[in-house]
Image (cartoon, rainbow, N blue to C red; front, side, top):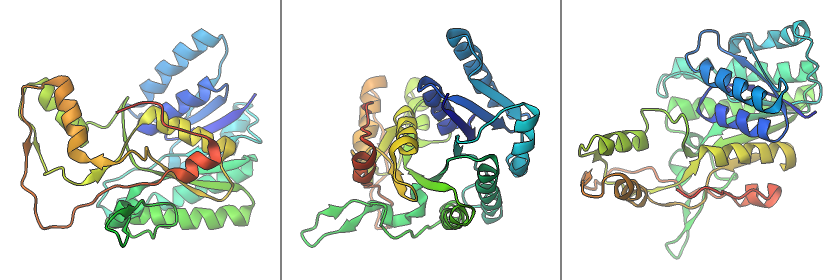
Length: 309
């Protein structure tokens, strides 16, 4: 049986990844943060999947990410042989602009590489973020005025603590993986939406206002954006684990970037077409846009997004 370990499996992207791996026939082990209110998601998934399949393919046990180096002991106690497994590290916490909180994620990410090596995992895949690119996520302007999308060779230039910590973790975990001799990939995730989406996102706010028949207040929404359903993101991460080239960074995005207002109007027309959105006037301030390239992901793995916005 194919095997995988997922940290952060109770989170937004993690839950869909766990479900995708189960659907692909994996036995999935999830160390979960003790007392997390999100653990119930995985417990419900475990109950429904075990009942449907008649076997225990999702294994949960409490283990704080700061103690991930103790993973091999827990696996021994549970009599679980995870040699040759895939190891997905999605766990990450803290306010995006809090440098100390973001910095505290880097050592656990490196420890995850060490833990994966100790248990004999075949590959570790760690999630990054569009925030690593900063304003370069909008691509570069070509001489004819068009844009070259941001690909994996685009210069990382983070503008907040979250992007800076992710960038540091990328280089440090890559080099550590080489040192301990384990295959490594970096999954640079762009804007996701879907099941268990965070309540503080712009899309969640917009939907909430329209469902309550309130007028939403948004920015000018003239910047270019890219949205990917979290289920398609899970499929992309699984595709990289099975077909991606070792040592590579992959953008996890849709590639169908458009003015942000195109997306907000789709939602408005679907939920409350008679309510107008209050868009703020355009300003001269620099605006972050997203124009990701996913050609490398498509060419290497054959993945394509399946869910339309």
